[in-house]
Image (cartoon, rainbow, N blue to C red; front, side, top):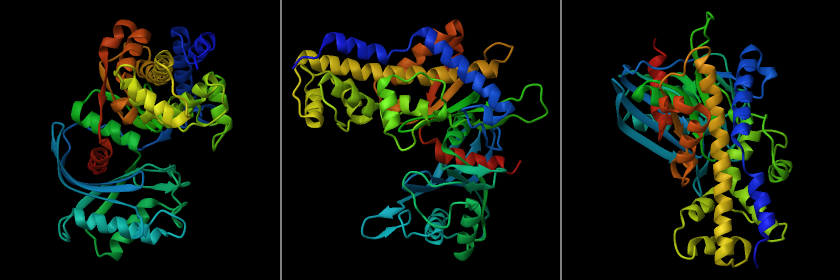
Length: 428
C-alpha cells in the first residue's frame, strides 16, 4: 500500500512545535517554577527540596555509594581526589531478582530481605573491613518525602517493586538496621538523593559551572540549583519531577496515549517526550496511516534503529516495521516512516530543551545568562540519533547569541559518583 500523502503531512504537522510555541512552553515552565517557589500546590512542578547544594569540586576522601533505582543495584567505593578528580576503587553490582534463585522486589518479599541483601553488597564493597569508617551516599530513585539530607521516607513503590514493609519508612533507617544485623558498624549512611540530583552533583564536581541536571531516557526529569536570589535561604538543588509539567498542548495521539495510560491526566511532558512513550506514539501514527487500530509495540530502540538506517532501500527499517505491523512497506513509505520517527524525536528534544530554557531564564533573573553546562544522562540523549544535535539547535533558536554560553554534557553513570559526593558534602 502507499500512505496518503495529505494524511501523512497532517500527522507531521501534529508533531511539529513552532518557535513561537516553544517560547511559550519555556515561558510557562519558568512561570511554574516561580509559582512553585511560592506554593508548590500552584504549580505542575513538584519543587522537591534535596537539602543539598553544589560541590566545590575540592571534595576528597573515600566514600561509599549505593545506587538503587531499578532491578539492578550497585555499591561503589569511590575515592574523591579533589579538583574534580575521582577513582572507582571497587564496584559490586547484582540484580534484586534472579530467576529461580531469589526475588527481593516481588510480592511476598520483605524489607528485611531486601536491605539485608543491600548490606551484603556493602560488605563486599568494603572487603569485610570493620575498622575504617565509611560515609555512604544513597541514590534512591523512588517517590520519597524528604525532610533533610538523611531522612527520605518512601511514599510509594514504582517500577513494579512490591517489597513489603518499605513504604512509609525512612530508607536509611532500614539500611542502618540491616548493616547492624550484619555487624557493620563502621558504615554510616548520611545522604539520600535521587538520580537526577546525582547527575547534577557528578557533573558539577567534574566540570563546575553546572546548575541543571536532567535524565532524558525511558523517563524524564530535571533538577536545578535554585539560588534563592534576594532571600535568606542557602542555594539548594530542587528536584522538579518535570515529567509532570502540564502546560503543553497534546495532539490526538498524545490524548489517546494518555487516556489509555496507567495514570490519565498526569505526566504530560514525560508522555510527550520520554523514551518510554515515543515508540508508542510512532506506532499509533503508523497504525492510522495503515488504516488499522492496533498497538504494534514499537519501542524507542526500534525508532533508533530506523533513524540510523542508511541502507538502500532502508532494509533495517523494512524488517522492523514488517515484524511489528505485518506490513511490508515500499521504499517511499519506508522513507516516510523514517521521517515520522524523526518528527517525534525532534518534538521530544525541542520540548525538553524548552524546559531547560525556562530554567536558564530563572537562573539569569534580571541579569545576563551565565556560561554553564547542562548535565544530561540517559539513553535518549546518549543513543537516539540526532537528539543531542536537536537540543543544541533548539538552544540557539530560543536563546540566540546567548546559546554560545550553554553546552550540554553527557553525565554518564552519574548516580554512583553523585551519591559519593553527597556523602562528602554531608560532612560540611
